[in-house]
Amino acid sequence: MSLGSFDRAAGYYDATRGLSPDVQRQVADVLTDALRGAGPSLEIGVGTGRIALPLHARGVRLVGTDVAAAMVARLVANAGGRQPFPLVLSDAAALPFRDAAFDGALACHVLHLIPEWTTVVDEVWRVLRPGAPFLVDFGGGTPAPWSKDIARIFRGHGIEHRRPGVSSVDPVAERLGVAPLPLPEIRVPVERTLGGDLADWEAQIHSWTWPYSAAQIRAACDDVREWARDSGRALGEPACLEQVIRWWSFIRPAA
Image (cartoon, rainbow, N blue to C red):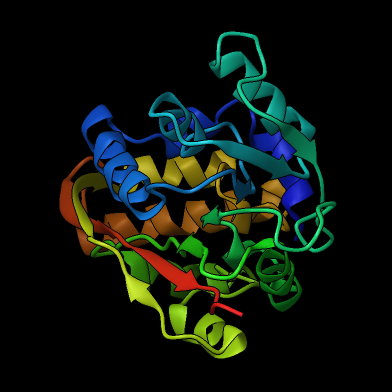
């Protein structure tokens, strides 16, 4: 799976991945503080500007890269139709910037999508000046009460929820040879229903569903509905969960 696949998500990405104004403010607070006093910072996988635009509004100097042209076009639309800061269509594994060009870098829900994640973090490290932070949110949602059963049913149809890249902090810290610094966490209440999840899976809004055919996903979801009927789980019954947003900072050592 490549980030280029996200061209297909440009039309619904903000509606399905967007943050509430309060959570967006909290994320911007954390990142602005981590980048305080920095010169230009690079966001890889800038997408529709979900992270970058609030930072730009606070005066953080940014450059954004992405391989998905449709996502970048949505960012420009979200900014009122004008490019708000330099935007470059580029593979994060081959960044078109000189060494030590940036005073900071960000990656939000990106590294877990990239099989060659080691090359990407090496490239980000290359373009960071000594002493600059690389800020990463690895993503990952909170399991719902039905998650284990759904995973079993989906596996029966040959469907796996795979994250081809890196999903946790330790491998990146080992790769870069630095101790990670956890930034303040943000706790977000989330309400989900199995019926809502089924609608999302059948619409294939999640990237992990994209390698599978619509018929394959639909057949698995039909079996989920049958399991729900047999187990007495109402599709509209809400599950109140808590998602934790956690950014990590990797500081490139001074020369």
